[in-house]
Amino acid sequence: MAQVSLQGIEKVYGNGFKAVHGVDLDIHDGEFMVFVGPSGCAKSTLLRMVAGLESISGGQLRIGGTVVNNLPPKQRGIAMVFQNYALYPHMKVYDNLAFGLNLSGMPKAEVDARVRDAARLLEMDHLLERYPKQLSGGQAQRVAVGRAIVKKPGVFLFDEPLSNLDAKLRASMRVRLTELHRTLREQGRASTAIYVTHDQVEAMTMGERICVLKDGTIQQVDVPTALYSRPANAFVAGFIGSPEMNIRPARLVSSDRGAAMLVGNTLLALPAPRAAKLTDWRERELRFGIRPEHIVADLQAPGVDAMTDLVTVDGRLRFVEHMGSEVFVHFDLGDVPFTCRASAELLGGVEHKQRGESHRFGLQMGQCHAFEPEGAGRNLLL
Image (cartoon, rainbow, N blue to C red):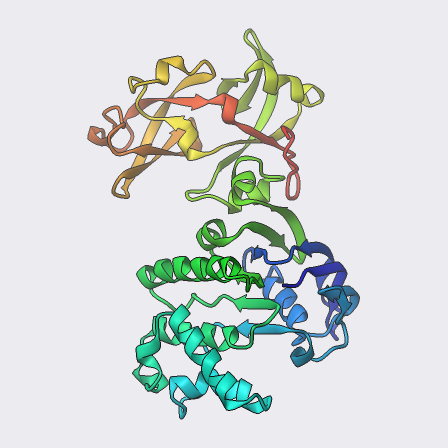
């Protein structure tokens, strides 16, 4: 196992462009850490700096307590799985797995033991005599992972390894990789894993902790449940979750029921505990946020009458997305668009209404968020 520590890491290219801005991050021994963010946020650049494939312009990188800024990749105790698999087409799977070990001069018996052990772990014993062109995308990806496993590295690095797979195979490979990491840990062979993806579903389902990046800076690092329920800012709130959080311009005003959010022309009363945290923002512009599942489409559903924080409003239907067991209802409050996520069985008749018709929704204001109006927008309710 190996802890990976990034202290003030910077990356500046020859043309003066600064891609990474003083990143500080400690990744624990044996942890599965996911870097997630939109294209161009520098997540792959950070991974490549850890791997030694990209030079570090500033700061200090430690792996297992050793400063590795100037060490070549082969001396860092890492193994990397690339997006494009990078298998040798003229070699069978067995030889692809064994190639790096043979180059290092490892005894043939040890090489054979490691290759067959990795094949068993990845359930690909039957593939060892095949060539890469005879493999499916998922099988080729497993070979690429196996080639990393045989090295028994301190740190696994994954650079968007599933992005070339179809949706069904990508989902099964998520499970396989997560289980593999836990299996190795249970066998006393745990390695630290850093996984890069732009897919927030992959991040949420695979990461023990997630590092959300934007424009070369860390926005938040936390466990998936905390990122979802307590986002540090509007960027994280909007990036994590599907469908994304409803985040709309608002103004905090006083009403006959106390403090309220004025969103467009709609007044949404705030519960006292949330209003108390926003005292300094009275009569000021901010951003109102609420997740789609905290908007109720069926006001007669069991348990709704017990929601003391529910504010009911009339919305104008736009369209409905049927997702199987769930339905996404898109509607407008005045001229402001919102999305509601509801069970297909608890729609309160909305499925029978036409575009432009009115429907009564309930917003759980005890679950709402408030963000600063500018930039990434700090969460004012944390």
